[in-house]
Image 1 (cartoon, helix red, strand yellow):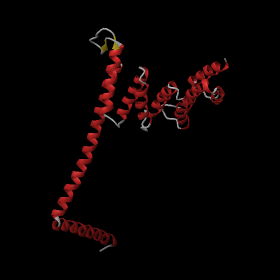
Image 2 (cartoon, helix red, strand yellow; image 1 turned 60 degrees about the horizontal axis):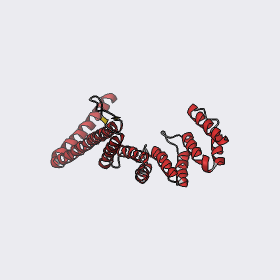
Image 3 (cartoon, helix red, strand yellow; image 1 turned 90 degrees about the vertical axis):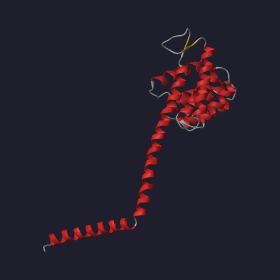
Length: 232
């Protein structure tokens, strides 16, 4: 027998032995193997089912949010068979708040729930409910979700309008120090400079001076407008 033939024979024997041991183990422990196979199958089915259910729940939450947005975007005026409408702005506002509150209650703690709560907070602020707006916006601002940065801006405006200037500054400074994809550092600095304009003009000038080199046309325009106001 050549070396090659011997190697093949050894490999064949090793495979045969391994296969034999496997089959012997299964035969001797059929009940145990079957039981574990069923457990593994159940786990796989459970994991697959969980992912399906999670995806399904997400789609339902998105539908909830879209339905609330449809109310929020509805027209005010005569009934229209082609688009949702309300006879008065007050009727639309009440319906919008109800729709958003429903999503907040149903989908609390989720991305969609916090988005609905952000819009609910801004709607309350626009309609003079500063206390309700503060509660909703603070919940979103503390959530750590994508909506948190936007909620901090809206909450800072509520604070400023209520004379809580230091709290408004603190929120905007937190965005300057930790900008996001939705709120850049430059945008946060402009809002901070706008807030400081009346209470600390010199500090506002320092902030604007640091933004002079920013190439974003929107930022440049805002810097020029604020600088002109401070110069008056």
